[in-house]
Image (tube, rainbow, N blue to C red; front, side, top):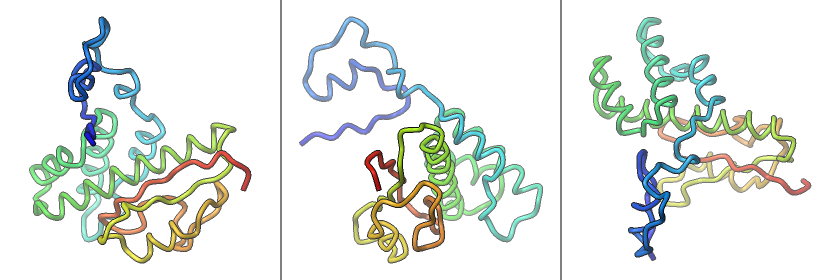
Length: 178
């Protein structure tokens, strides 16, 4: 089974070619869905990014917050953000990667949660782990809790991922009655 990793800038025809499908007349543009910025994620990053990063001074936190906000706004992945952090703040590559992964997941999940609440459609939320051997027990407990209300906290005390640095979990909307 072929799985297509959707990357920034991939066109419809490039995606169709991966699956052996013929091109479409309008297939050279980036699909609108992939070219959108989650404004709620950007707003969260502007206000809260780097809040969990420890042992840094205020100016470093401000720089991280601005860099994370730019990453979310411009659609960077964790690898690009990690490279930018490592180059600009004197963090090791490993620490930069941890910060990048954690901040992108935090901003995206928080933006999604705010969107679920504003939608009038979502009735709850559910924690989804990566489903592999690297899943922390804390996150597995959150997933095992199943659907909960939009304003409720998961067993870890978090209202959405991440629950810890390097967390790879996602938040899903629930649209059925709880």
